[in-house]
Image (cartoon, rainbow, N blue to C red):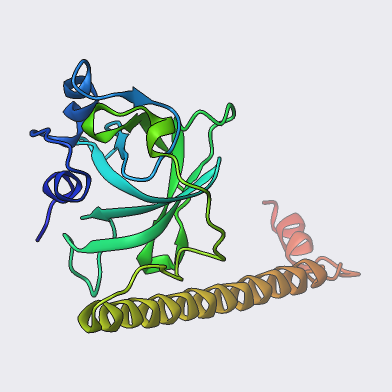
Amino acid sequence: MLQCVPYARQVSGIEIYGDAHSWWQQADGRYERGKRPAPGAVLAFKPHRSMQLGHVAAVSKVIDSRRVLLDHANWSPINGRKGQVERNVLAEDVSAANDWSEVRVWYSPIGGLGTTRYPVHGFIYPQGRKPQDLQAAPVQIASADQPTGKLSRAERKAQRQAEKEARKRLKQIEKQRREYAKYLKKQQKAQRERAGVSVPSVPRLEADPIGDLIGRSGG
């Protein structure tokens, strides 16, 4: 099981230790920091919900001002196991000001970007260099499931297995959705049928034998 911190340190060369949430403050005065994505920079996440230790991920490529590819560890469970490495996965800036203060990140089990908006500090640039010194020409790719780097046989096998499991899970979700829609339809039909059935009224009698008997017997 590999944590995000040692992996980010290994691929970026940024010599910061400690929990991921402390990287942004530790980088102050040691490394350039900013809001502009650049290859080789480390994206530092703030603590959020269950991710109280934060997260760090290295930028492998810049697609455009809103999208980058990340190399990181211990984000998506692969084959049901945490602590796995993911390469060239998509991260998207969803902040209103395009300042990379909030992002969505590719999540392997669903085969797409998750719905959670993660708060982010910004980018830490290696070797004290400014982002313009690192910036490369943007590349165009269709999606994060088309990695541009070469993968080992084991990585390709793991990726295919993860994609297979994601498709299987999506099929299960779709099946459950259809079954639930059928259930709701049956419930609505039953309600309409109940609403359309009128309760028959008790017929009124021409004579009242019980009342007559009470009258004759004096109560």
